[in-house]
Image (cartoon, rainbow, N blue to C red; front, side, top):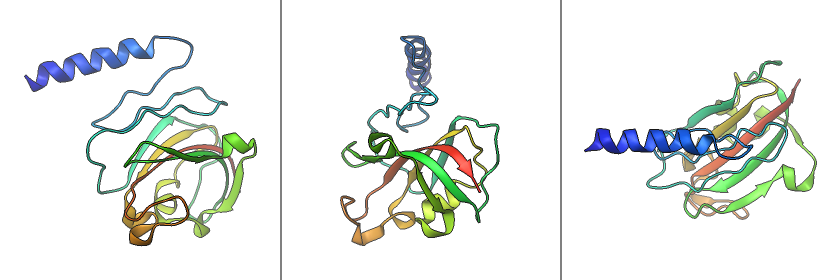
Length: 157
């Protein structure tokens, strides 16, 4: 029964990918889907089920430019969604300006999840609370929240 269900889901994902102009990365397990429309804000499908308890990174688009190192300063576009309610929290695409920052100055989930990413790439990060804002939360992020980031690498210095 599980094999049939997985086969149906795989075929459905392939069929949906062919619809419209925007491609969608196939969901793995219960990870959210992410559009592959390079140069445009991504669309993120709401997550389902229980969130992963460890950091998950998935390249949606593999870049071909400079590679990020733990000591890099990144220029990125990003979109943030919370796992608990699938709510879009913030996006640099909305402001129209990418964000630039040293990786050493951001949450641990980014420090561990961004190195190896190349300029021109889009990466999905699913960050458990202990690598994000933890039990205290922060701003619009509630306590013990799993974070979903879609990051487009624009520059690495």
